[in-house]
Each structure stands twice: as C-alpha cells, then as structure tokens.
Length: 544
RNA sequence: GGUCCCGUAGCUCAGUAGGAUAGAGCACAAGUUUCCUAAACUUGGGGUCGCAGGUUCGAUUCCUGCCGGGAUCACCA
Image 1: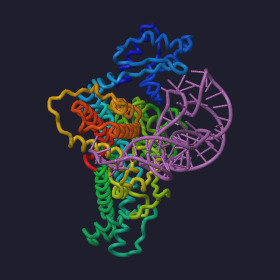
Image 2 (image 1 turned 180 degrees about the vertical axis):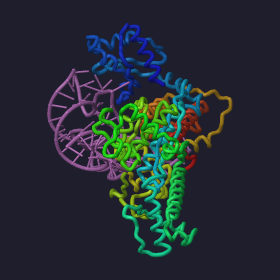
Image 3 (image 1 turned 180 degrees about the horizontal axis):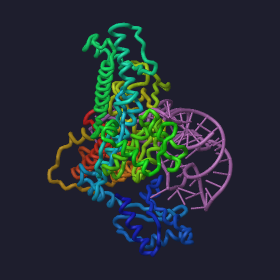
Image 4 (image 1 turned 60 degrees about the vertical axis):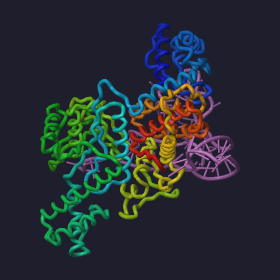
C-alpha cells in the first residue's frame, strides 16, 4: 500500500523530468530502519545511462517529487545514491484507517478479468497410502491454489491418476498372495515386485472375512476382485488423509479416459501428420531431437502400449483445450526428467507451453532428536502421512510442509513438531491470535465513540501498522513466485510485532479514545493473522 | 558421465529481478509478571554467505570452473 503510493510519486517525477526509463521503478524496505520506511534506487540504476553522478541525479529526482508534506516527513539521499523516504505517523495511521474499513476482505485482490488456473497436485495412483513426499506435494499444491483464489483467480484443483496397467495388476497379485497366506497356506509365494506394505495384508484380511475362501482358485476374475477392492481401499484412504488436511480437489482425472475417449489416438495422429513420429524396432518414437531435446524417445512400445510420455502429453493437451490461462503441476524431484518431454510435446502440438508452470519440490526427510527416522513403526517402510498426522496434528503438518522454500530439501523435525510449546513455530502465530481474541472478549464496547487512529503514534504501534499494511503485497508476491513460505515468514513477523506492541502498549483500562484505537489495531491484527492462516489452511484458535 | 536442486551462525533455514552494517527460529547465557493469555517480551555471544576466478560504482545474489550433498537419466510411471 505504501509502496504503491510512493511508486506513483516517483513515476510522476521521472515523467516530469522527461526521462525515459525502461522497466519498473524499484521501491524496497531498507534493512536498517534508520534509513527510513522505504527506499528507492532509481538514481543509481540510471546514473550511468544518463552519464550523471548518482547523488546528483538523486537530488534532481527529489527536486521533482511532488508530495504532501503531511504525508512524508523526510526525503534524503544516503550512501551511493539511495533516496530514502520516511512517512509521517499521520500518514501511516490514515492508511491504516482505510484498511480497517475493509476488514474481512483485506488482502483479497479483485481482478477485472480473473484468470482460469488449473493446479494439479497429489496425483498418487491408488496402489498404496500417501507418504511424506505426497504430503509436501499436497500442501504446496493446496496452498498455492488458495493463494491464487485469494488473488482473484478462478482455480480448479485437480488430481490425475491411473488405475490401469502394470502397477494395478501388481497390487491385485500382492493382495491375492496375502489373501492366500491368510486363508490357506502361510508359505504362499509373494510376487517379487509386489507391494510389501502392511496395508496389503489389511486389505486381504477384509477380503478373507467378507468372501471366505471363494477366491481360492485364483482365476482372472478373482485377481480382478482383489485389484478392484485394493483400488477402492487405497482411494478411500487417500481421500481420508487429504480430508484430514482439509484438502478437497475438484476434478479427479482418470488417465484411462484418455484412451476410451480416443485422445491418445488423436495425439498420435497429430504427431504423425506433423512428421514428428517414426517407427523403429517395432515401437513408435517421437522426434524429440527436432524439438530441441537430446534424444528421441519411445511413445508407443512394441507391445502396443504407450509409455507414460504419451498420456502425459495428451493430458496436458486436454487441460489446454479446457481453456486455462495457467496450468500448474506440482511434482516431486523424482519426476524432473519427464518435464522437458511433456513441455516439448505440448509445444509441438501447437500450444504455448509458457503457460505451464511446473513446481518441483525436493524431498522430505524425517528427523527426531537429531537422528534421521527412516522406518515407519507400523509399515516397516517409509512413514505414511497418516502416521505423521496422528503424531503431530494437521496444523503442524501443513505449516511445516510450507515453511521452507520448495526447491530445498525439507527436514521435518519430529521432536520440534511434537513439542506443544513456544518452541514450535506454528503455536507462535496461533498464540497471537488467541491472545487478541481474549483481549477483545474482555473489552467493553464504548458506544458511539469515534475511533481516533491518529493516536496510534507509539513506535510499536507504528511498526505493527506498517506490517499490517504489507499483507496484500505479500499475498501477491507469494502467489506470483509460487512461494508459500513468504506468507509463513510474514505471519511470524506480524505476530512478533503484535507481541511487542502488547508488551509496550496497554490496551484495556486506558483512556477511552486510546483504548478504542488500540483495540482497533488489535482487531485488524487478528484479521490479518486469521486471513493468512486461512490461506495456509491452518486453524486460528480463539483459545489455547 | 549428462541434466536439475542444494551448500549462509553450533542446528534448521530466510534473504538473491545486484544495493547500505547478511537475518530469524532453535540451542546457549542473563533478565522481565501486584498489570489485557510468560505458548510472551528484553539483552548478549556467535559468520572466510562451500572454494577460485569473472562481469561493475557495488556480488550471498549474475556468469564460468572446481569441491561436497541429494535427485534423475527405460520400449517403469
């Protein structure tokens, strides 16, 4: 809010000076508060192309700035040519009075023409339970979706899955083997590449109790039953787990529909007609080398089955045909190799692959007391997301999964996450919210008393107001950069500024007008924390 | 070997469309409550921003090379 105001003033000054400047003017918050509230480096940026000394240029710019002396307290040149701006407390509080009017909608951006955005995440096949990597994927995807909704766009949350093919028949065979071990022979052979998780036995037990030994012959149909029940069971678990995280997707796109609807054939025909496909060794290859990649790749195997690339390309083509302005894919680092193929394939079909944004997140490791936790207690394999939720709760899981940049490895510290105390960063934010609620509950409403925002001149009050004024900028930046942790970091700063204000400035039992103004500040802080936590999918408790 | 990600305080990490004295949390040390939630606040120590070059007024940030850690390189998905 403050930035936008200042940008305008600088823009006008530069226009007035008749200067041609390419790109935006950059206004930043100086690290050192003594340098003012905001700082602009135009003078240094353009000194060279104008053949001037930066400090001289800065002076000229300042001479051309037109502003209200009631709003800006100080404009000065510092260091090599920074122009530092200090606002008057009056201006800060008047900005605050404006946002205090908006309340519920503060931070929401309304776009004149909302963009249609598709965000695909989780997308686990129904062959097992969700584990930690899926958890990070799910929370990143959902939070980014929230951010884009908040910034005024129309968002579709999508899940892409495949319930056909090798993996699934493998699931059926694995369940069948466990089933036979239960009803007949404990030595019944388990497939080499079968799924070893304990959940397979859980499913087999259900089958055994429901159907007795009626599948003992092991016909094709019996295997099908195992597969079908396995799929249903896994999906139910996955949906339940996501539900716990308050994640609900709008579209579940089945890869199989690409085949039944003839989309795969359409894409193959189009590649052929563009002379981008050729047969070799009985397989169909796509000329990726002509699309700027290293090697040609098989898209249809000699067995007649497509490789994963073909449906992936066809799927993205479908998303384009549905008319999205932005298509976001959230993948784990293990999928990185497939990205260039899909992008090149879609481009070859004539779509603008710049509209696809692939978010690749790095892996999650779990540590406890400084040591890496490798095995899950129940499954003996990697930790499931449900187990983690049981241990630390939804709020902590959601917060921990987005509190780091998505491109860095995430160390999930179980000891810290389990800690129900001030050490845990989630509680810091929630505590601020609960504390404010408690104060508001205790306050007596003073009727018909005008709120005098200009009384909020204390340093701690001014600092808190300035933080609150940043909220919309942060939401926009977090969405644009696809970095939810910016918001998490920001909320910590807001909470911190609030706690300081709380210690410095007594709210209740002060003069009526002071109390009213401070109460308003507390309420607005609560609103920002609540809205921010809402975007992060984390609860804002009234009591702790 | 090719490609991608990471390397910043004892630990976990912010910070990079190039900016002023590099930050936070945890850990460690010392303090704050007759008073609105002490899950809070205040103060302190702690750094060759992996290494070496380059680009320029200025580099943790951009470029190149190297070192270290991770991921990935199928007619698996």
